[in-house]
Image (cartoon, rainbow, N blue to C red; front, side, top):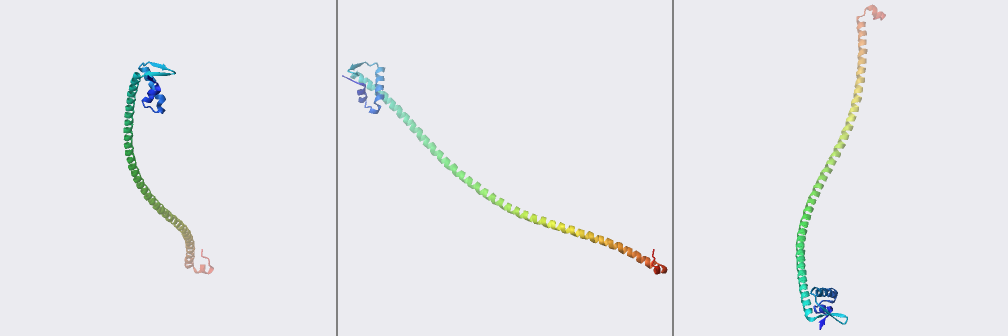
Length: 192
């Protein structure tokens, strides 16, 4: 008696979801080992002693695939664990750098506030200085106006003094002539 490809797959304990794939593997193994099949009705049947060779060869391949998958899974697990450790280190470094950045930013903000305060004080001082400068300029203009006015008054006074001095000199000359004049000149009032 023999077994069909489906019966061999069921003997190997293949789940029904993987049945199509495993049936193809069984067919491939039959071809690889050059096993002869017999037709029984509309199905091909494999002799029982050949079934054992096929099952042992496929189990050996499955074991190799399973061990390879296991190794691959272990390698992936090692890689995942390594990445987790690296991620953890990076996270701690990131937190440390974030804290440093916060401290530096805080210091810089404090420095900026301090400098802004100084700038405001300088601005207030400058405004006060500017106001005083404007006051001094106004006072200077007023003083210059007064000086000009007083200079004009002084020139006017000098002019009047010069005019008075001229008249005084003329009068003095007349007085001198009168005093030096003869009697006849005094009577006739001709002093030339």
